Image (tube, rainbow, N blue to C red; front, side):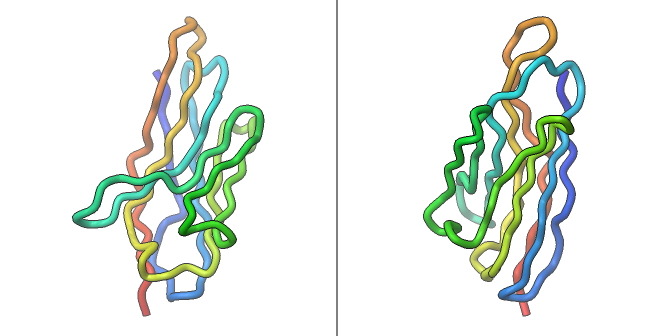
Length: 120
């Protein structure tokens, strides 16, 4: 069983910054992809950023140049640095981690979600 704990959301003014963190724990043997998704009210969940085990990164077009994804493999933690935030970035942000457990099975775990609100 793998658990994810997210932190770092909150209220910020347009143009401000926030850093989200997501730490994975439990019966982890290896982690492959780590990423962030978001869901705004009345909209479908969408990919924000993903980073692979080989450290390749993919970001949604709307956040390129503003958001950065990184990971600390020693801490099983993924980060999302969000700069130049816009009101349209307001959403619940969910962390995703995929990998293998110590018994060899695949896991795909989601965080509980953290609210990011961009408003003056």
